[in-house]
Amino acid sequence: MKKENTTLRAFRQYSGYNPKYFPLCLLQTIFKNASFFFSLWMTAKIVDALYEGMEKRELYLLVAAALAGILLIRSVAAILDRQVETALEVLENHEAEAFYRKALGLDYDKIENPDIRQIRRKIDENKHINEYGVIRMRTMLLLMMDSLVNLAFSAVLFTEMFSLMAAAPFQWLSLILLAALIASVAGGFLSGLRGNRIWSTYLNDVSAMFLKENRISQGYKVSGMDNRIYRQQPIINELYQKSAMEHKKAMLTGFGIRFYFLEAPSAVFSWITTGLSYLIICLYCTLGAFPVGSVIKYVGYLRKLTESIQILLDTLGWIQENEKFLRDYLAFFDLENDMYQGSLAVEKRSDKKFLISFRNVSFRYAGCDDFALEDISLDLRSGERLAVVGMNGSGKTTFVKLLCRLYDPTEGEIVMNDFNIRKYDYRQYLDIFSVVFQDYNLLAVPLGNNVSCAAAWDQGKAEQLLQEVGFGERYREMPKGLKTPVYKEFDTDGVDLSGGEAQKVALARALYRDTPFIILDEPTAALDPIAEAEIYAKFDEIVGDKTAIYISHRLSSCQLCDRILVFHEGRIVQSGTHQELLADETGKYYELWHAQAQYYA
Ligand code: ADP
Image 1: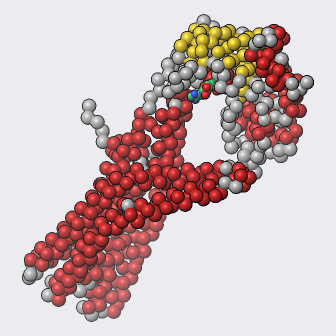
Image 2 (image 1 turned 60 degrees about the horizontal axis):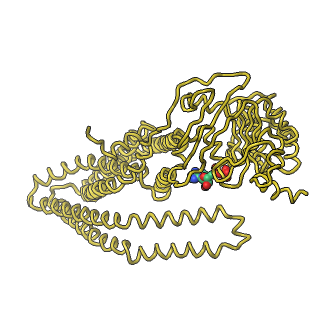
């Protein structure tokens, strides 16, 4: 099968985000150029009329017709301007949406995969900082469209001018004019080609420079508070200055200067051509072959003609240059999910009885040599409260990610009610879990939507849960109740939540789903001691008949659990109740417990 041209494919995909956009642009371009050609044409007519001593009344009529025509064309062009702007907004919205839909639809392991993150970052930076990829394609296509429309208009005047010349004496003058035009376009084209070559040699350096500046400026914003405390400004200023120096050096000694020398000959060519056009056209006027107004008309249009051909040739070079960025862009859309999607329905059990077993499960992250989890075997009994403890990096979060099938094991299997979890319908399997991750996210939408994760919510249930997780007092301060927007991004009436308050809302959200499993990864890390104590006191009531998995560094809280798993270097090294584990003085739990307990003694 023949491979489709990259730009063509990217154009088909991109224009599909709003099929109205490019046709509207074409219409707008036609009217814009019509306005230019019409005023040129009418001005020439008026000059002719003045020269020929036209009667005043007729002259006024001619001027009025010119003004009315221009007004009409410009009005249509202005209306089209608005339409094009709106169409572009829609197109860009849909394009961004498609990009994020693709990203969110990818298997989770691909979202975290360092290579794929790099592709996304590259696309993002190329698009927003250097404006390569689809943005460059769009601007080039619009320029091309403009040139082609111009050429079409010019063709009419070109035919008119050369047929007048052909009928006049000194026909060889028209050949000189034609030759000058061709030479000017060719000169421009050659310098353009050379320019493109220079540009593409330096393209990587230039992009790298822009990216660096962007990263510096982002770093500058993010660390606003630290900046003040640690007086980081001098470091950042130095980075900026260094970058500015590099820029200056490149412009003065590198490609900048080479561009300068390239542009000079093409400017001289164009100057000579314009001079020649004036000379030859004036000469034809004096010979009586052209009406006087033609000086304005033909010189104006000849300039536009050469400009258009020039731009057309330049854009062709740019479109080719842009292909490599489009290839990156399309490669992202070409990523395919390969996680096995099961079809087995997950039984809807009101008694929430699900038995999940890990059988000799090991897991290694993409691009890593070491296993993050090794040979994990355990049964999660229905309704159990399980605590997972261990030092940073011991594999606790990875264990949760495997349980929720964000990743599949590298070795071994996870089984639910006798079937490998891969066999279950993926969506249905995910629906049996609620998780409060350490880096949970609330959305800038009303509180009710945040709790219910849906367009509507059950008022009584949501309010009761917010009360249970200790958000009651804050909730009562909110005049709009569940309709209160969270955060101020979209609404100045929105509320900013402290870390602890947001964590309570995230907890209420997890409970609202009422799933058989609830997993809490450091759920009280941001809470004050009183709020934390309140949650622990109500832990049993809050969790109800769900199976709860609870990751915590505060070992005192693990006493609430039926069983504690101690992770160390990717393995489960101990398992038992608080009392059993503490009895083993050589065990990891004993060590962890005493490291903390000494401060409470
Ligand atoms: P814990 O939750 O106990 O702090 P994790 O499960 O987050 O530990 O991490 C276990 C190991 O896996 C660590 O060595 C960590 O560096 C590594 N790891 C975690 N996430 C990733 C990832 N997305 N890619 C590569 N390695 C990871």
